Each structure stands twice: as C-alpha cells, then as structure tokens.
Image 1 (cartoon, protein in one colour):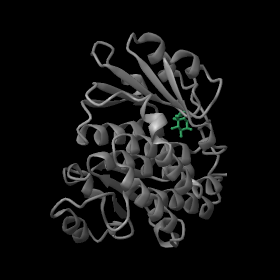
Image 2 (image 1 turned 90 degrees about the vertical axis):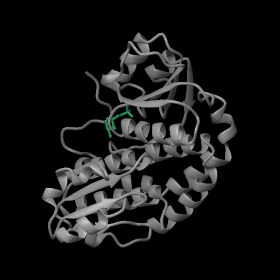
Image 3 (image 1 turned 30 degrees about the vertical axis):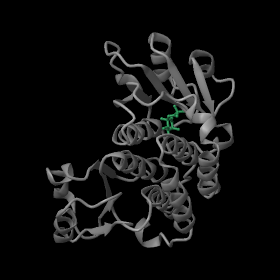
Image 4 (image 1 turned 135 degrees about the vertical axis):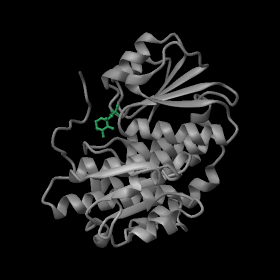
Length: 289
Ligand code: F1P
C-alpha cells in the first residue's frame, strides 16, 4: 500500500492549498498561543508546524509528544494530530485539558472526534499502510498553507512529482543514515529517520543540523549517509565531507519533496531486505495502551 499512497502526495498537497480558507477558519488565529501535539509521525509534523507558525509571526507555538503535555501551562488552543483518532496519549490529553482543542484526523467516528471541540477531517488522505506517509504530509501541507506559505507549497508539489521519479537504489544501499534539519525541517528529519526504522527496521538517527556536530558526527564514515533537509548551515557540509560519509542534500528541491525521496528510500530498503514495508514488526496502526 505504502508505494501507492506515496505517489498521491503532490495532488493532496495542492488540494490542501486550494481549500485552505475552509481549514484556516478552524485553526487557531494569528496571535494565539498554541500547543500542538501528536505521537510518532504526528509528533514530528507537530514539530514542523510549531516552527513554521512561530517563524511566520503567527504566535508562540510549542510542540509536544502526546505523553509529555505540560498541563500546568496556559495556551489559547491545543492542536492535536492523530491519523487513527485512537492513540491513547492524545485521547488522554484531550480528555484532561480544559483548553480549547482542534483535532486533525483521518478517521470519521473515531474517539478523538467526540472529544475535541473542533475537528478537521482528512479522511481522503487516510492510509492502509501502518507506516504513515500521505496523511502526515497532507496535514503538514494544510498547516503550512494556513500560515501563509501556499506559494511554497505549490512548488513543493511540483518538486514532489520529480521526487517520485528519482532512482533511489544507491541511497537505499547506504548502511546507515543520519537526517538533519533546521527549524521546521528538524521535524522532517525525524520523520525521514522514522520511516526507515519503521519500514526497513534500519538504524537511523535525526538531529538539528548544528547539534549534529556536538557528538553524533562521530559515527559518520564511508558507506553511511548524512541527509540534510533545507538550508545548509555554514561549514557543516565540509565537516561531513571530511568524514567520507555520503552527503544527501536536495538543495534545489522543497524539503517536503526531499522527504518524499526519503519515504521511497525506506520502501526500497525494506523490499531489498525482504521485509513488508506496510507491516513493521512490533508496530500496529494505532498504539493503544
Ligand atoms: C501515531 C503512530 C504513527 C505510527 C504508527 C503507530 O498514530 O505512532 O506515527 O506510524 O502508525 O501510530 P496516530 O495517532 O497518528 O494515529
């Protein structure tokens, strides 16, 4: 399923951009102090949204893993992302908080719909694969357009179409990959790393690009990869090049298109290892206590 779901992303992102007015009306207004929460992939999309919203001047925005919500802190609204609408930590959070909540989900009739004050339903982006791809990126496309970045999203969709044609054989053959990003692309780096862990049971890591120099670079070596999303901080690529590791940096592509390539690498690596990329070991579609 995952390969078929990956290819639908550019069209879904355009669809989000075209209908953004209807969704933006439900999301917290500019100036509001917002917490955004999710688990796994949904947490990484929350991280990306938090940086985009805050850097775009729309107001203080903090991202949390579902289990780590600081109940003592005051926000104007909480945005909760969950494809399944059944993940224990996010349901627990919505049940316990007095703050206004907006849920983004793909599952009509799921518990989150009854618990949240408002719901954005992206059922057309739902997936059959356990491994999330298009629900996550369609959610991010919506959130990105909602903070006034629709033009970037149009380019991202075009770049993603190109990303669907790239040969990923060599990338899938790397022994290990560490993914790096800055600001909103830190979330993309974590998501790319999770795709390989989920789909291909592969060892990956992810860090903010500058923090990578503070220790993690020690594992870089020939045969391993360092995949950078977004702009390259000064000097970083030189440091990586000196280790002999392969640098992957799609500088000309939108970072979301680079994520599409990373999704395809995860699938290719899984298939090369004889694994089913839709059904990772020890993982279910929704993690319920
Ligand atoms: C969250 C999640 C996914 C993961 C897997 C299990 O799900 O952890 O990130 O890929 O599908 O569930 P959800 O709360 O978004 O449904």
